[in-house]
Length: 323
Image (cartoon, rainbow, N blue to C red; front, side):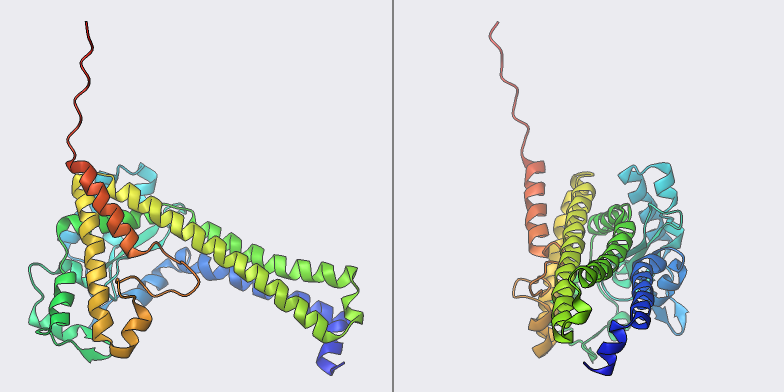
């Protein structure tokens, strides 16, 4: 038995393992909690888009649009107050996001991409600031034209996107992820501890214990991934249904929003060269391995198309009853 294995088999080693388990559990618990609660402003600053060393402000017109979406969603007063439109910020990149949660008093903040401020076209100055894969974009190519078109969203698409993020912010995702992280770490240590005691594993070869820890860690990690991905998937579906179900305008906005995301991803797939196919599929979905972290964009677009068709169908006249 090596000195390290002998140390962890001793009483002092058991105490050290317990301390390390406490530190690991605490760290895993705080990772999803702090950035979305107590350090919300720090998270906002980290994700903020800057220009010449200053944060890019959100135009007043966009603030009014956020307030309009809050009104259309008919959020409860306390929930609405925890997603202040005035705290919205310009996020780096092309994806709208939210940080925090409206379920906590610390609230949530919407991060709005700079391209939501574009009108009918992108100005030459803005084009110079857009870089893909550390390279400037050739805007006259087919991929460049497609990318520019994908970044121009109508008011309906923008309002749907904002509503979707508000619905996602109005979930218990922070609390659940915090609990799952804590429970996973604790379960890993507790099960290993109990198994070591009952099976007298410290009297057995270290290789056997290492195999046990690997199997146990793999099972718990797989369970953690399943819970995280499953809940994220469901919350995204629910947010899509709630946002697109506000009105026909929002339903049409959802169709445009996901169509433009797929168009953007396909353009990026070409512009990024060899890296493109590693990030995006030939349909425009994010490339994923064995996990399904999010609802595929193609699925959301097709669902939005069916929803729009349902709005177009005229209501069938009620059958006339014979007198």
